[in-house]
Image (tube, rainbow, N blue to C red; front, top):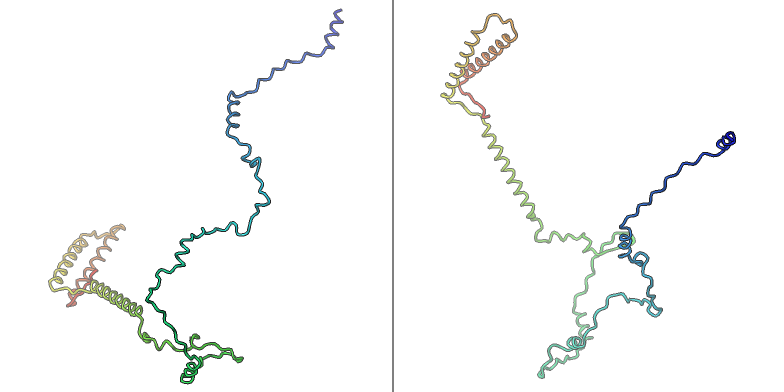
Length: 253
């Protein structure tokens, strides 16, 4: 019996695991309200056109000039006022009776006594005789008969005056600049004052030069000595130039 029960246990399939149940789908509580609002303002014919369209009858076909604007009909009173004259002639008015004339004799006398008609001048420009009127062609020198022929135009005179005025202003400005930059002659008093100042500077530099050490073993000492020598040489040159010349001019910088 035990062997039989063991055989039965070995041959039976294993029990399948229990599957969990599906969760219910989420449904919004406002679903019915949204559907109602969507259908509320929706018209079925807005996108596809009206359901029924009035078909025009065959008798109402489009006539020629039917869509052109038409004027309003005139009133009879206005037409009558326009047809009637504004003022009627008086009773004392007598129309002038024209006397018939002999136009044949008159025309004959006018032709006999009149001057012959002069031919119009033409210009022929081709061998075949192609011609055109000479007067409107531009070949007739009509311009010499004008009143303004040979007279300088007003715009030319005005432009020349403007150019002349601008040139005078430019020359005046240049002269003023030259006067500002002109050389100035020194007076005797200024000359003596400048000489005194230059000699005073030379004495101060010479004293500083005399106090220099005899041994110039460093670069700074050599540079300082060369600088003092250069300044002394320049002062000596200026003093000599002022004392040598009687008149000294300086530029206005």
